[in-house]
Length: 73
Image 1 (spheres, rainbow, N blue to C red):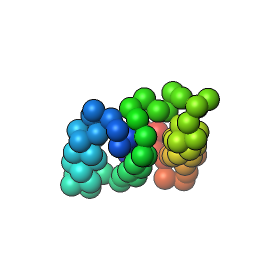
Image 2: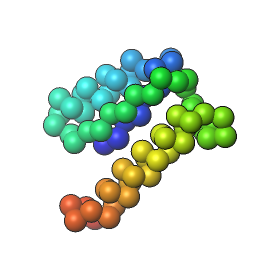
Image 3: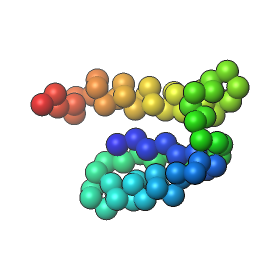
């Protein structure tokens, strides 16, 4: 699972609790925190963090779908 959290998000604590729960349930997890605002991913024209976040998502999905470990069940 990939969890991306903005530090200035009203749901930040819930997202971190969700990530903690995944971790405790032994789900493979990548947690990325960005020092920015809620909804930043949609702001690629304005925020460098949005560009980096989209790269993180793209890389994670590419690795998940094209790795030898991908199971299409």
